[in-house]
Figure 1 (cartoon, rainbow, N blue to C red):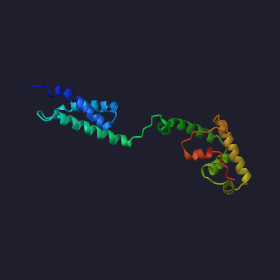
Figure 2 (cartoon, one colour):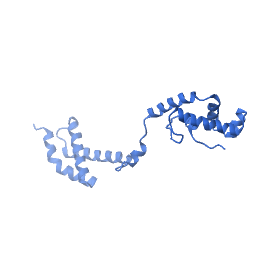
Figure 3 (tube, helix red, strand yellow):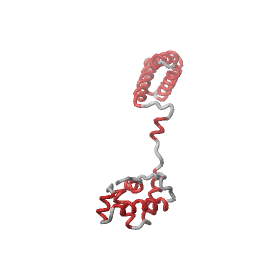
Figure 4 (cartoon, rainbow, N blue to C red):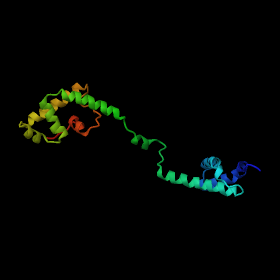
Length: 181
């Protein structure tokens, strides 16, 4: 009794022709035939002795082809890497380290500067609203916000116009240069 695996070689030419007719590309067809042979070899225990090996192989090839097509339909080709570049993100630890540094620096501000920064930066209050809340003039709030931001930049060894990568929206609001006039 011969091993049915020996029969695989006899069908390679027909399998390749069928794969080329499906893919219309010789390189893709060769990959498809190779994938088919791997699947057939690993699943030979499912092949029924005495049945049509060619039909079994062609069924595997056809199913593999359609599976690849379904998979590729969901994929986006990105040969130049533009899409992948847009999907990448900086590591979270940078933001957490910046947050820790910010919190340490923010605690060193005087109460009036912290209060003004929280109201205007984080709370979204206008300068007028913040001034009314604190019972001071608008110019006083503007001065506290500007001095507070400058002091934060100094404590964090940053230039005032240097962007800070912050993961917390509230903190980003405090640090942001906003005009609420």
